[in-house]
Length: 356
Image 1: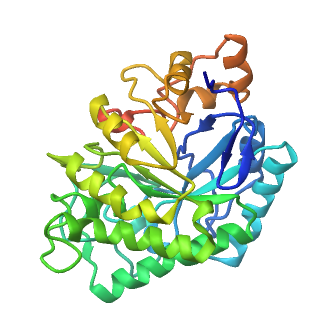
Image 2 (image 1 turned 30 degrees about the vertical axis):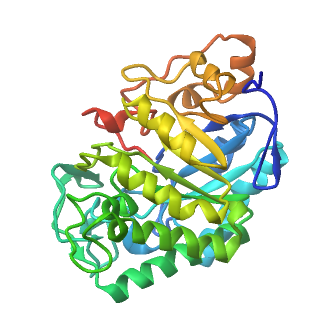
């Protein structure tokens, strides 16, 4: 029987355990350059005991930013600043992937450089508000991407992935979950296009396939993971029959031999089993545990073969040395859910946090 405390080879790199730190938005890249800070280097180094750290969402371009003070990977200054973070994690023996997150329609013009507005597959505004430095603001109607702009967005992801490697990351995770741009292309309510980038299943998965393929070709498929959250209604997403779309997506990506698939699970565990069966590479599971945070019981998912790795979110915030505490059976500090951004499954509730 395999346990979560055993090593695993992921993308050619030997990880110390099968316990991953899930991506969680922290909004600590203070300043106009959206550059990582020393505080972030300390934060990630403290958690280097994870088998794999996946960073907070990192915008691949200026227009991809949806929240205040989130970091980018599209300028030389950002690359240099991230090197401080990756060096700190590697000195502690950890492995770290950058999560590339283009928020699409989720955001506000006040968060973007002058003249830019949020973009999306279709000009459909999300219901709700986003937090800004001036307080909460209603989501605006996004600009529908032209085909040329879609191509440039794919290039932005590719350039950011190359920057991640230059910055010392072990790889990148492409954020295809939680109602952000890649997810917006996958979902029928946000993708109302009738051209080759929309319509039926093949059209809606095309953007995800092309982004993943381009990034894999740029930095090597062994350095690329993908995160998905089928059926997650967070950020005003509606997917009535996600199984068909996501099984088609995984089928198209199978030949790339990616480092891993990271599933942010919904209430339907039968869909998890279907996707687990369809995926031939490493399967990372962020299990559905609402209303509780993911706890020690999730370790059994590795033992039972439901996942190759299990991802923890909120518990890692309150317990930087979480793998050691899990191995010892505790004790565990309790996360203060009223103050942190992120967590395990806020996307399936009305809980007012930012979730990467």
